[in-house]
Amino acid sequence: MKKGEIRLNGVSKIYKSREKRQGFSALNGINLIIKPGDRIGLIGHNGSGKTTLLKIIAGIARASEGEVKIEGKINSLLEIGAGFHPDLSGLENIMLNGLLAGLSRKRVLELTDQIVEYSGLEKFIKMPFYTYSSGMKLKLAFSVAVAANPDILIFDEVVSMGDEKFIKLFKRYFVEVLKQKKTVIFATHVLEILPLYCDKTVWMEDGKIIMEGGSKQVIGKYLEVERKA
Image (tube, rainbow, N blue to C red; front, side, top):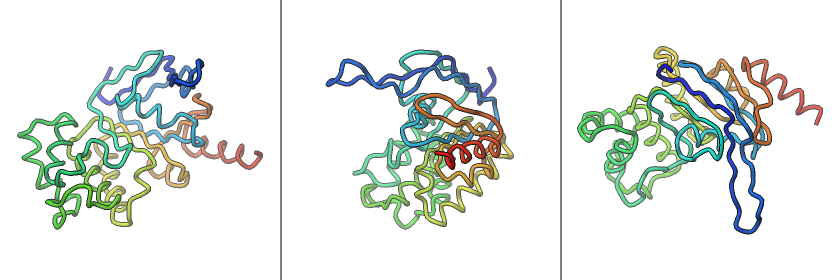
């Protein structure tokens, strides 16, 4: 396998409930190959399995069945504030999150000024993280993720919570992603932006892949089914 490659074979995820003997099946036999440099959009209704799939790829959750093969370093932005301590300052959290992202302490120190400048939070960087707005938390988390220079980047709907400045930052970064040919997986309900960022799209429902292919074709079919529903 090459850096940035992801292979899922028969991946299922069952969440067990204490109240019920039968668990909830969030993913059902997912087979998916993502090649290095692919930019994959992920669509489907709430509860379709998108977030569970992203968490398994990111290593946050484990598959109940099947095989997950990933080559390369991953960084994900799935939940605002995940991996950050609310009582630590933004500056201290850069070190904490950088270490969690797999960087050495020396490398985080080398990148700190760049991360702070990129986030645009110079005036607030020594304030406790719990005082940050959702948008500020998102900017800092995104800036650390970018600085970690992963081979695979995973984004969820959380990026849509950013303000206009963040969206511009996000778009500018994607231009660099295209040049560097990193692997990107981007789950969103804002269908119109997917063709701008993703060359392929995977449509999921009920924990299964319904269709995968070119973004315009998959989104077109998805909207056609939605109109008939």
